[in-house]
Image 1 (cartoon, protein in one colour):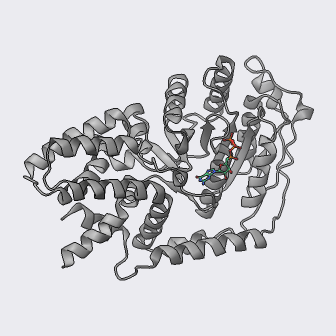
Image 2 (image 1 turned 90 degrees about the horizontal axis):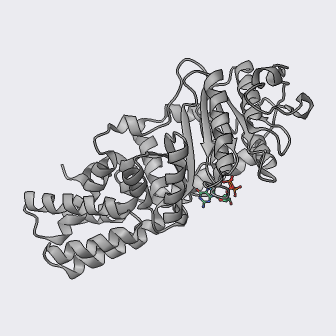
Image 3 (image 1 turned 45 degrees about the horizontal axis):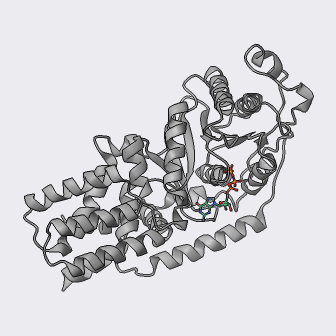
Length: 415
Ligand SMILES: Nc1nc2c(ncn2[C@@H]2O[C@H](COP(=O)(O)OP(=O)(O)OP(=O)(O)O)[C@@H](O)[C@H]2O)c(=O)[nH]1
């Protein structure tokens, strides 16, 4: 079966052209309702006095009185807990909604990419060396990354020969297929996609990354997503460095109805995370999401601080953190790549949370990250709304990049 057809069958419901717009409208209104109906029920989480003693000798611990765990444990508000309804939806419905989000979020990249590819295909009748040279430029201009582009072009050339493709129009489809193949490489889809979950207890996700990339927003969106899936979530405000970071996380806590464990500004992040783990355990939480300061990659001290945070987590929950998610801003292109390289050299980054994909025409960075850093993209920010965070899926990503062509292709083949 043709690859475009496969994607269409996977992601697009037949005979429903206005799927995307109706989904967008309903998401927007449900977000509004969530805000309006938010009602929070609180209960105190008992604080242990073990923090200081258990961290001594390894961390500088703030006085116990600086610990302000005025935690609000929130029961699921009906308007927030829309999860069970989603459970009832069949897989096709879910995939359609994911596809709609990727399509919308990748609109800028698609518009630029598609028009360049269409233009290329229109100008060249046959697939020759010059065609590939221009295609190379198109891919590089979408931030796919030089090494990744070279590999794709090589693969494409072989595939075109193998299938004896002469018509440039057919190449569009082969490109999309190769992008997915290249993303997975020798790995299984299931190994690369989705966040690792600790089936035997508390799952801990540690967020790292420089300031201003959208780390806090992503943590808030993830908390909301997990909560809607029925998980009990706790947040730890480990960014004690940036002014306002704690308050910003607290706002997300209120918005999503998730408790936030905090110390005062300037406190020891490792101590905050330690308290976060204690609180999460005492309330039987499923997931603890830890924020950390926006460490500048060249600041050795800050990197050491991050190691300390990791050591505390590893000691308190064996096997944790289950993901170390480096947040990168897709709109910063090569700068994001260099941040990723430095972070990957300093800590075991297990996945990338790529924000603001909707804000760039250079969404090809997903492939550059995967190919050049060998780190999978786990989460993508596809817009500013709370619901605009998706688990990365290479098929949905490529669908988002080629959506217009896939529709055109269907029309052509029906003629
Ligand atoms: N369009 C769009 N905007 C985003 C996305 N993720 C975050 N943002 C916006 O980016 C801005 C910065 O995000 P924040 O989470 O506040 O990041 P920050 O506080 O500057 O710094 P850190 O939390 O340290 O990363 C906010 O206006 C967010 O709404 C996304 O996926 N798409």
